[in-house]
Every structure is written in C-alpha cells, then in structure tokens.
Length: 346
Image 1 (spheres, one colour):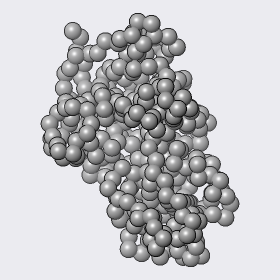
Image 2 (tube, one colour):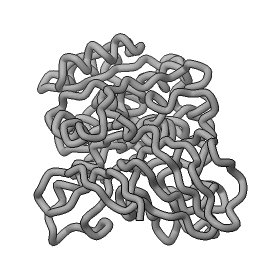
Image 3 (tube, one colour):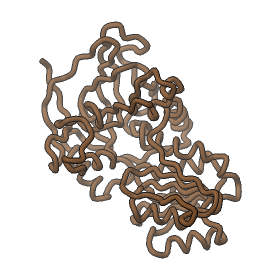
Image 4 (spheres, rainbow, N blue to C red):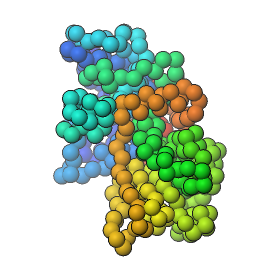
C-alpha cells in the first residue's frame, strides 16, 4: 500500500502531528485529489479543545482540515463530471444530497446533518484525500490554489452571512464587523464590494485593526470597554443596522447585543460559546438574530467569481506540511494575519 503524509489530531488534549498513513483509494463515484493547499481554521482548534466527554466529531485519529484545493489524481469506478488533472476546490459541508435543502444546493443545512472533511471524516491536511461525490467540487480554473483555498470557508461563510442582509444595508446604514481575523477580514471586503454601508470594524489586535482599514473599513478601533460608546457616537446614537460577530465569544456577543439598532440584525458567525439573549427586555424592538453555518454550493461558485474579478483577496501565510503543527500554534496564539495555509507538497 502506498503511503502519504497527513496532519492528524491523535489524542485528546494533545497537539496535532504529521504522520505517515496509507494513501486512500477511490471507490465507486468517488474522486481522489492530490492536495495543493489546505487552510487551517479556528474551528479545528475548537475540535481539539473539546473535552473527551463532549467530543462529537470523527473518532481519533482524525486528519484535520476542511478547506481544501487539489488536482484530480484518480477517478473511482463510474465517476464522471471531472477529468484527471482538473484543478478544483472542495465544498466542505457534505449533505445527503437528496433532502429538500440539499436539492437546493444548501447542503450546509441538510436535514440529516452534514458529514464534513476534517470534522466528521478524514480531512484536507494530507497529500491526498477522497471526495465522496463530484458535486462537492468547484472548478478553480487558473486561480492559484494557495491564496484561493480558503474561499471554501473563510470567504464562503462571510458571504453566506452577508448576502441575506444586503437589503438592510442600503446607503446611510452601518455594518459592524466584530473580529477581523480569518473570516472577518474577508467580511470587510465583501461589505465593501457589495454595499455602500458605512463599515465599522473592531478587534482586540492592533494589527487586525490596521488591516481592516487597509481593506476598506471606514472606522476601525479596539474592541474594549469604550467600543460600544464609540459605535453609538459614530451612528448618531442609533447603533449598527447589521452586526456581524465573527468571534462568537461571550464578550463579542454582549457587544453585538449592546450596539444593534432598532429593527436591526445580529448575525452570529464565529464558532465559540457566546450567545445573544433574545427577549422583550434584552434587545431593541424588531431585532432579528441569525446563526450561520458555512454556505451553499451555489454561493461558493459566486465567491470564486468574486475572487476571479479581484473583489476579494484572502491574506494567507504559507506553511510546509512538516510545519503544519506550527501553523496551529501560531493560529492558537492569534499570530496569523488572515489565514494559515498548509501546502502538502512542500
């Protein structure tokens, strides 16, 4: 059996390791990809920090990574729709394919639950991976896979969060972006490209604050004890019409609650333990709260087109496969500007 390198989470409480494992063989209808890039995400850190008695993901050892780009290396029996040598992105939330949500391309909302690489099955942080169906592949064309790989989550998720709120973000309104990290820095770009709303960005990291201004935020400052008052001042005491929380922690959820405008929207994007209490006395009147998860296959195609047109660009730092554990250490420490991308061939 031919082997390959992969980054695996192997033991509860331990850090991930690069190991040698068997290279998979595609079955009927499946596709074997030779991976060209894989993105590291805070969701991976969430998985690795989950206590053993609360762990609901794939059994260990788990090959990490749910952002993937690759080249079609081999087709399983009966597989059609792609050719060996095609450069593709991997759509991450794999649904059943036949329920009402999946029939609309919304596999992220599959009524039977999703089975995602790097979360519920072997992931993208390997030299090769199996994709269960060609419908989970999106052509990459001439786009460079390394800066493009995180379109599959770091761009798709903010796009899915922002798109339904576009009717509320008319000229004269305000969008608040909480957290300008891997997803939030793309959120700022999407808001700039798709709306004429005033964009306020807040973060605890000065480098991220500066990055937000570079990307087109109208205002950016520290997410500290004075942040809510500054947001109120900038909006004439009205508050933000749409608040996008790309962190999802208790302090950021509290900031969203305290700064949303009457009839506004709060969109929870970040994967953490924060929550917004919804009740008659906890939020301004007519506020809606939405929790998002990834995005649809159609939206990924739209995101790729935005990247192709130069409307969005993901900031990435590259790591060789042997340095993948270091990528997660720096991600955990908040030292990554944008997204960490592992290149398995290096």
